[in-house]
Length: 553
Image 1 (cartoon, one colour):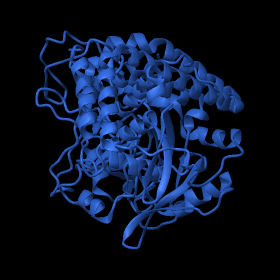
Image 2: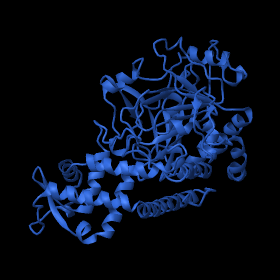
Image 3: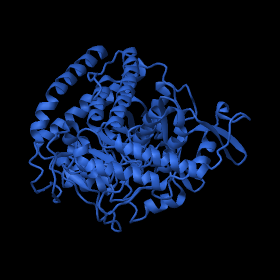
Image 4: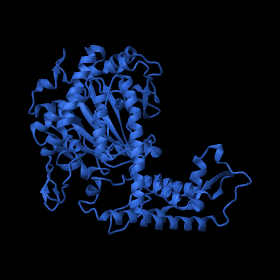
């Protein structure tokens, strides 16, 4: 029966996949970029792209994702959104919110989410993946927020070989959440939709995690006072995330500004107590909101957030439902004490849009490699010794320039970007615009890309410093193979030589943009093909398959 259900689900996905790029495009037809229109949120928009992103435009109508991308969180709901001022009297900041334009779109969204994955499929994951490892670096986590040493921490069941039954017991009786990582490697439908998302975002990779949190009732049906259940402590991600609420409800709190602007994997860390307190203050976060089945939420990397299931006595739930146009019985049930609340666990899927390899800094790193191919003798073959705090490493100018770019991009305290008042700020950690995103970035004027790219190079040239790059290189290069011996010479005039080589690279990169871009696209295609090939092997091993096989390039 499970096999038949899986086959039916895959057939439904095939049908969705076949009609996606026709029906959705019709629903999201845009006008000329010269038109001025008012969005569903009441804001005037001076530009609308002519191209369609079928998936993004389905979940974030009116092209609102274009404005929010890498800038601010965005909630997309199929329900009537209600600010909760009486519950958050000191917080007047409302998260930017858009509503599904019509019932057809709302039903399509909800049905598509249920087609991806449902609660009934949890058992299939455990039965088809008998070797799932539990723990921080494993395949799944059984975890919940815990308070100790005056701050929140992530509490994890301390057992590597945790069985399905043990995970379920912790979920049912102790309020632990279940997190399954890498769902794009375990479930064909999720892999299919993740790759469609990826094709629209020009990302290197999208990882999908499943989050299942118990309902906020007394555990195991006991007559106890309800309590909200948290899977995680307040945290931020190093990737942009899109959350799709499949079933149940969850109360979300999202910071109004990032802890680390456009964080990357290297800058991911546990936020300090002061940062958490600032986030929890009335001005540090948006008014809390409820994510319900069919809703979607976008959070840029670097924004603190937290979520919990809602307790039955929590006034919020009744406030939403009493004003809802839907049937109250869809959301609540009455317990033995007359309490009301959602008895269902919360199930959501988080699509992590990994920008590693696709940022401005990554583009410049590949530009250096292309530069080295053209001047191999000077840039790649000329080896010298670098010293910092009595640690000695050898390097080439190719490696050192690449280290300079990464060091500048990973500065957290200051913004290492070149600013020109006549052009946008150049962000080294920002996604490098490619494909349809060029039009999005530059509001339809793609001719601005060349000047923007020149600003990026100028910003690197003005910001990168020899001594900071040297410290960074020696600190993070621990491979004994790179240690200097007496045959490797030191630079006679390191700073001046560095500036000369850096200027030579910038001049080369400005003149050879088209060639560098083609080189970059080849690297991206190879990377995506390799990742998808490995994921296809993992899917096939558990009897699953993605219907999206062709890399987007």
